Length: 187
Image (cartoon, rainbow, N blue to C red):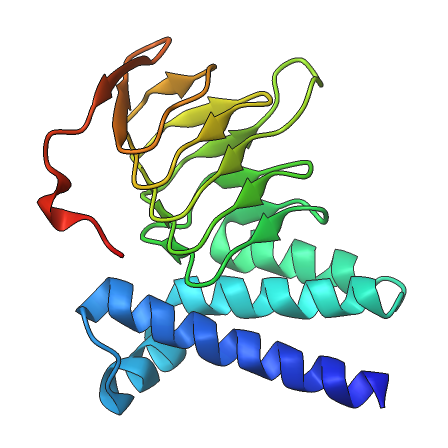
């Protein structure tokens, strides 16, 4: 019975991911948009493989997590650690070169623009990224930092400190400013 419940839960997570990705990519969740995301989006393939990896770990199935991680890296160009938590509808605009390590936690509808690193530089902890955050191309978020909801991380920024909600982080190391454009906030 536990297996059946877990199978339903995984299917529910995949459907939820498809709906959130369709909303992020197309602005709506009609059947055609959801079908297009499922059939054509690398982002959906990444999240589906990650959900399968989570299930393999939950059921202690040897080697499956490792094989799927290697396939994910080889085919899609993204490295996601086995203890990473991905929220619903995480959107990888360009997956190539993204590394998410350790036990980082990624919230719902976080958008990665490519070649990002979310991890640690000193083995002192991993980031928590809250919901609806956008991470610009080449950005690095390192250490035990929290990136607040609806924040924007600029391209090539290196975030080494907490970022409050509704903020913008830019530069090396990142300087933090309040967001002025809150009219496009996703709720």
